[in-house]
Length: 283
Ligand code: NA7
Image (cartoon, rainbow, N blue to C red; front, side, top):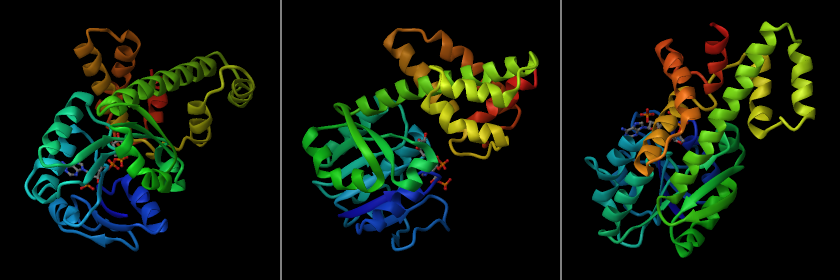
């Protein structure tokens, strides 16, 4: 398929590369210049990138960035043709997603929100899970692209529901990792052997995908970004905002946010969110 891929960050670049590998005709664009993908054409603006595309795939940092790419100067809306499908894999506000979809619909474009889970390793290995919102027929049309970049896509409902479900997923990741990190800090203070604790965790019901993924990095104290803290922090803010709009409280997540606020103040935002362990350990 002819795909315009907009946003070549930690996630977007390997995703676009996997589309090329599977034989799709890909045109890429990134806000700052110099980021390219082998085998893909590079465009000078979103408008230029989408000119001949059947599908536009977006993966940028936050709600404001998606709005800029879609409706800013020389944005997607300036160049898109009726019938084009726009898929957004950024994690952004569900309510904004619905608004963006309505604006694009006036130009005859279909919208799908398809944020991902699987982090950098999933993007590189083509094993992401897409958490999708949109019409079933539209999702079917982009199935080959989901399959090129991921191992599965799950439809959560109409437009916006992918983002809503993604926030519900990251809420759990933030809380599970916080539990692991607090347990480690306590166990260290009480003189427990860390290796023995890891073995115990992995053989007990406490074991989880989140901990399986993070444990090797924690062991090496390698907190370089797989999923930067600033993005998980953003997701926590989005989740608390969505909860406020829904009239509910999330007391656990609100407390975890305080740890992220401290990490941010300590200048750790570009590290992996796993670095919150160091923040807790420094008390
Ligand atoms: P990164 O590695 O921080 O990459 C962010 C990308 O978003 C990168 O290409 C940025 O361009 C781009 N960006 C940021 N702001 C803008 C604006 N205003 N306009 C256009 N492009 C922008 O994030 P990840 O790849 O890890 O994650 C992407 C999304 O997936 C995010 O929502 C996560 O929560 C999940 P730059 O190179 O800085 O010019």
